[in-house]
Structure formats: C-alpha cells, structure tokens
Length: 70
Image 1: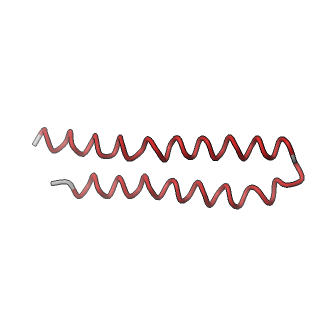
Image 2 (image 1 turned 135 degrees about the vertical axis):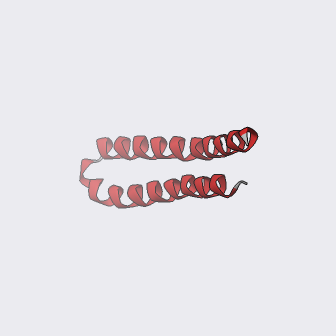
C-alpha cells in the first residue's frame, strides 16, 4: 500500500514539472513581448491563454494517470 502511494506521488510530481515550467516560460515571453510592443497586447493574450490551457491539460493528464495507478 505504501509503495502505491509513493508511485502516485512520483507520477504527479513528474507530470507537473513540465507544465509548471511551460506556463512560466509562456507568461514570461508574453510579458516580454507586450513590454516591447504594448499595442500588440490584445493579439498576444489569446494565444498565451490557449497555450497555458494546453500546458495545464498535460498536468491534468498526469493527475488522471496517478489516480489510475492501483
């Protein structure tokens, strides 16, 4: 039982690292782009939010996998 809990913890930890880094990089680059060209903020925000949503979906998939480990 304890080994299964450890496996679940490892699965979600590894599965959350990449999306966390991705969202941080996406936000940083979007803010850098808006800082260079403030008029393009409305054009940058929508793709940024979509990219963040896709990265967050990967973390949700990792959570589903962690729950499916028996």
